[in-house]
Each structure stands twice: as structure tokens, then as C-alpha cells.
Image (cartoon, rainbow, N blue to C red; front, side):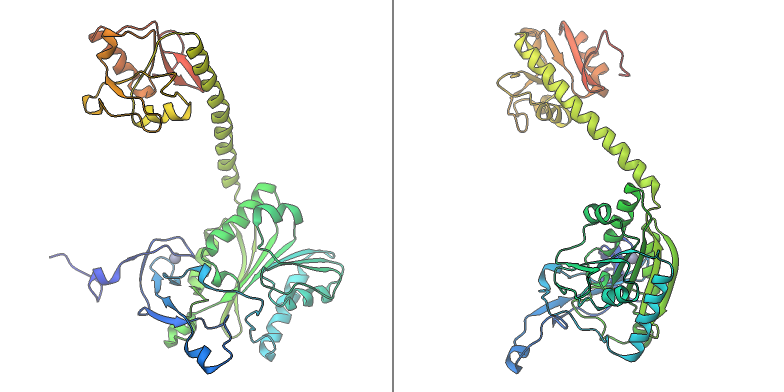
Amino acid sequence: MGKNNTIVPLVDLLRQETCPACGHHVAVPFIDPSLQPLATVAWPRSLNEAKSMHRLPLDFVRCVECEHVFNAAFDYSRVPYTRKPNRMFNKGIVWAENIKSVRKEMLDQLPKNPIVVEIGHGDGNFLMGLAKDCPEGEYIGFDPHGARTADIPCVQFHSCLFEPALHLPELNPDLIISRHVLEHLTNPLGFIQSLSFSAACIGVKPELYIEVPCIDQAIETGRTVDFYYEHNSQFTTQSFKKMLERCGVKIKRINHIYGGEVICAFVRLGRCQSHVRIAKSAFLFLDRIRKSENTIVEQLNALHKSGKSVAIWGGTGKSAAFINRYQADAERFPVVVDSDMTKVGTFVPGTGQEIRFRDWLTEHPAEVIIIPPQWRAKDIMEEMKQHGIRADTVFIEHEGCLTDYASEAHPY
Ligand SMILES: [Zn+2]
């Protein structure tokens, strides 16, 4: 018997779920699943309406890598966000003091006429407060369900989502703010990584301020009211840190406000140059493939026009990929052979040539043979010799074109 270090049977413990904060794939049960109505976005107007509300699945699990707690049954499309922003306790005195000091900290490190973006501006009060304190700046809010008009000229609200790849280059902000947004997203890690990658790609280093609820105290004290449908992602100090560490950002400061119930961070974006290098190299590959695709399609066209008889060796796997990618259709290239008897009599996926046994070529020699799986070319040449199969030319695909196996340079 193997030993089990956990207090419950392992089968009741292991859940393969992807952590929204750190991307780890193993989690464990945290609260027994239940069905609950939405807690913040629907405002029932009658007893009946309240009692008959649709219930959504809560299945909170905990990531074993970073401690994050999340609803594994969450589906963003089931939250009907409307223009009734969830009014947080914005007017409380402690809260107001906290907000004031966060704004001050922001302005202290910004230039005199900053460009500030807020992702999910809600009622717009935070951004407008900043604008009042520093009217020389430009303030742009993005929120599909947020306030639409501002009475301050330097503030604009857009009723759409902030798209890093589009809006970051367009606006080039000094500061991006995201307050009480990430806990609603399906993939907060992916969102910050996209911001970080976009900044690195365009060579800018904006500051990012993030603020989310923190459940450290809820866990310590066994509190459960925090765990409702709209907050699918529940950060602990540890999971918040881990998420940021996975985003290629420079963490300048992480701290708690509002008596430990909220965690916030200032980070610097635009640092992950290694990601930019990989993106460049992927694009070079893509560009090269696009060019070679045309080259090989042209070579096949020319081969067909020349009237030479052509056979393709191999009709599945890499050969099928070759035939489909380069449009070697069954009308122009009907002859496909294979060394493997078990494939004989089947058809090439997509284009439909019937696959014949290689010996067909002893009776019906082809002037040109194309061998799509380069790594097998040497073996196939040997096989041809043994079975008396001849061809004037054998082509393999190498560096973006059909290459003469016998006379041109290649590593196969
Ligand atoms: Zn995690």
C-alpha cells in the first residue's frame, strides 16, 4: 500500500483545474459546491423576483501552487453586467482616505501632464478625482458598462474593453489603472501578461496599478461571504504576488489597504524582452513559410505543366500535410504510393488520392518522385534501389523549395 499524506482520499482531493492567477493546473476543493443567485449585478425589485432568481454554480477550489481560490464552474458570459455598477462602499470614510492616498501616490510619480488609462472605470469617480487633482493630464476610461460621460474636459470614457494590442500603442499611457476588475475576469494572468507583452513589443514602460480584494483574513477567520459568483477569482497575498511574478513585470510595491481587505501593487511593464525576441523569431518563421508556400505551389504547378509523370511517396502524416498545404490535388497529382501495406487502399485525407503500394511504381514508373518526409528520404532511396524503382528526379522539401535529392545540398 502506498502511503497517503493527505487527510482525505486522494481521489476526493485532486482537481485538474487551471489557476487564473498562476496558471498551475492542480487544485483541491475549497468550499462544497452549491447553486447561488448572483449577488451584486442583479437588483431584484420584489420578493417574488428575489426568490425566483436563477441560481449559478459555485465550485470554489484552491490552487496548490499559489493558494489562489477560484470558482471552477465560472462562466463569464453568465454574468449579465449592466450599467448598474456594483456600488462599492465608495463613500465610507476609511475607504475615501485610502482612495485619496492612492491617488496622491500615483500623482507623485507621474509627469506633470500624464496620460492615464483606467481599465474598468465603473462610475468614473476615481479617474475624475485624479483629473481634478491634476487637470493638465489626459484621462481615458474603458468600461463597456461604465459611466459614459464626464463633466471634466480632460476625461474621456469609452464604452468598450481595453485591448492591450490596440489601445496601448494608440494611447501610450504613463499609468494604467485596474481597480476591482481582475477578480471578475476568467483569465487575469493572461490579461496582465498581454499588457506586459504589448508594452515590451512597442518599447514603452508604463506603470500599472492593480487593486483587488484580498481573502487572507477571510481564510484565517473562516469567513465565507466573500465567495459569490461574480468574484470568481479570489486573491490571497501569495496568489497576487505569484501572478505578478509570472508577468515579466518589475514589482515596485505590493501592500494592503482597507485593513488588509484589499491588496494593491504598482508594477512597471515593458520588461520582458525575451518574449519579444521569441515573437520576432516566430514571425520570421511565419514569413519564410508564407514565401516558401508560394514557391512550392509554383514548383508543383510547373511540374504539372511540364507533363512529366509524378508520384508522391507517402499519403498520411507528413505526406498528407505536404499534399494539403501545397495543394497537390488528386486531379493533377493522382499517384500516391506508400511503403506501408496497411495504408494501401486508403485515401489521402482531404485530397482523396487512393494510396497504392510502392511496387505499383515498378510497373508504372514515374519520372519524378516527391518524398515529403525528409527524414525518411535516405531509407526510401535505398528501398527504391532494392525494388528496382527508378526516377529521373527525386525531390524533397528543403528550405522552402523542392530540392533535388541527388544533386542539391541538404542535410538528409
Ligand atoms: Zn495558482
